[in-house]
Structures are given as structure tokens and as C-alpha cells.
Length: 468
Image (cartoon, rainbow, N blue to C red; front, side):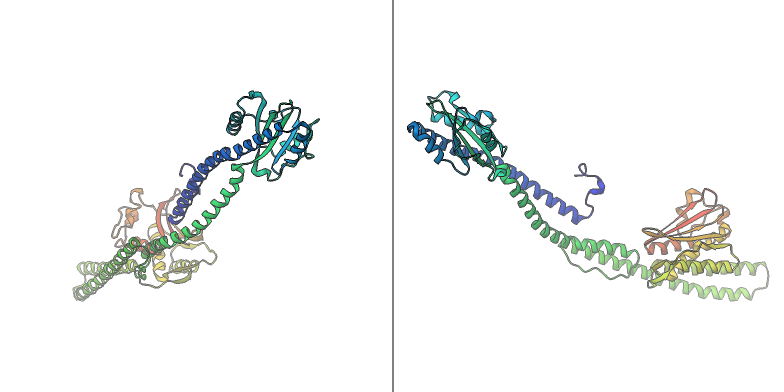
């Protein structure tokens, strides 16, 4: 199937593929069955309709041959039928049509057995599938005693072929017969199409219902897996559907519960450690303040400040990965503008390109913290920030540019690792190395992506893409 159709036309979902395979198999099997049936039916028509017509012709010839000459015309006239036409003439009218084919050969052999002493040229059998040919030929014939004027053989023409038989009587005249033989191909085509369409509609409707019923839990399963990355406290999935799907659902719910307890335990441990660390840090700060003023006291107090900053950053990182803030709709453009205004009011070189309102459902404080970290990073290491936001067809993109030294290409991915700090001019004066990690965790928690690229004209670009 992949070679017959372009990839874009192939069904993508499991339900569509299952439905397509089922309907394709159903149609192919019925087409094969109908083809076999048509071949057998054609043979049956040849063996019955054609030979029956030949027997009727033989009977008429025997009767006509036994009658006196003056009675023959009357008998021929009275033998006319709706789909059976007979007339006397000076020539073999059957010689004008196709004298090849299985039916013609079979009927010719059958008649030859009826008249074994007749020369072969006294029996002419032909065939035509042109509906108007017999009547047209009769209309054009001259010098022929016609039983009916231009006999109408167009009755049910579309479902019949026409068998012509000419038999030469002993008086030299030809007894011409035209018989309408059912056409199995024409008669069966409409029936076959109607049958296949009816079966396809009935089976397709039942199959679609069953396939949708079976695959619905898988759709819910995929949505829950996507939701898990955004909200680890999401409601567990109902354990329904087929046995295999229910088993997978139970495993997924168990995994979600373990992850939730793991994250909660980690947050509780970090909170407890930070609380326990703050007590000795506070005692050390008190003792340092009692020290004599000098270089040693300054260094001790500076170290304690770094420890407190690290503890606060670790707590922020833990909260960013836990996503315990409820979601609500905000104006994303106004949210980013407020971040830029706060930095600009504080004297930083931060500009924001105004945009229309962009309603967006998010965890407001978390997303604000992530974007603020990126703006502060641009200000601190790039000398300033130029921020813009735009709605794309399938995402909302936030762009933060600076004119700093950029980041080595080899470190553009590792820069997001917790506690990772690069060497060089952009790394001087850096914090504990959690700002970008926190921003990435928050953006990923919203189902988005964050990337850093060096701009060709210099500086760094941070691109945040949030799902629309």
C-alpha cells in the first residue's frame, strides 16, 4: 500500500488503518468471488441459453421443412416472439456478424450434430453485442419477407447479447433467427456494485464502531501520557477497554503514582535539607558578625551568602519541576511586558516589541519565573535584552536576543544541565547554574521547547515555543 499511495494519503491513526485494511480485504475478496462467479455464469449461459436457443431453432427448421411451401410463411409469421425473431430471406443474414467466440462455436457444433448430413455452409452462426444491430439490419434488408415491420429488439438491450443463426432450407431460401441471450456481464455489473457497496456500508459502519471502541482507550492513554509531563498530579485513567489496554492502563497509573510520590519525596527532602541547612548557616552568620572586622569576616559572610543563594536556587528548581501551581488564563503579551518593564525601571537595557493580546492558559508564576530567568540571563551576560512574542499557527513563540559573546556551539545543549556553568567571559559572575535548568523545566512542564542559538550578527537568541 505504501508504494501505491503517497505517504500523505495513507491513513495515520490505528483506527483508520484497521478500517482501511478491513474494507480493502472485504472489497477484494468480493471482487474475486464475483469474477469467479461471472466466469462460471458465462459458461452456464453458453451451455443453457445458447444451446436452448439452438434447440428451438432446430425444432423450427424441422417443422418448416415438413410443411408445404404455401404454409411456411404463415408458420414463420406466427412464430415471432418478444426476444425471438424469425424471417425468411434469400441470404444468410448471420454471415454479417461476428462468427467467432465460445458461444458461436458451441452452438455451431450443437447444430451440426442435429444435422450431421448437412454441409457446413448451410449452417451459419454469429454473435453481436450491439443492441440496435439486429433491428437496423432488418430495416435495411430488401426483398425479405419480414414478419414484423422493423422488429424492436431493444427490449432490455443493455442486459442482452444477440445470437444470429441462419439455416438454408431445401428450397434454397434461408431461415434467419435472431435471439436475445442474457449478457451475464452487463446484467451482473450493477448488481455486483450495489452488493459490494451495501456490504461495505454495513460492515464498515459496524467495523468503525468496533475499531473506535477498541482504540478509544489508546487515544486516552496517549493524551494521559502527554498530560503527565505537564501535571504529575493528573487524575488516573479509568481501567477499561480490552484486556491488554486495561493492563497497560494499570501499569501507567502505577507509574504515575510512583513518579508523583518520587517527586513529592524529593521536594520534601530538599525542603527539609534546606530548612536544616539554614539553621547552621544562620548560626555561622551570627558568629561571623561577632568576629573582628576584616578580610576574614568579609570572606566568611560572602561564603554564607553564596550558600543561602544556592539553597534558595535548589528550592526554586524543586518547585519548578513539581508544577504545584494551578493553571489559569493570562495575557501572555502583558505578562512579558511586565517582566521587561520591571527590568527597564531598574536601569537594565531591556526593550519589548509590543504585540496584540495573546490569551494563554498556563501556570502564571512559574512561566513568569522562567521568562524572567531568560531575560535576566540576557541582561547579565549580553548587556541587554530585546524581547518579542508572536502567535504562530501551532505555537506561541517568545524570542529573547542579546548582543553578548554568545555560547560555544559544543555547549549549547549542556548549558541546561543543573549546576553547569561555562568558562569564559559569559560565565564570569554567574550564579549557581540553575537559572536555565529552572527555565527549561518550567517550559517543558507546559509542553513547550526552549533552545539557545548563536546569532550570525553576534549575541545569543533564546527561543521559547509554547503549544498553542
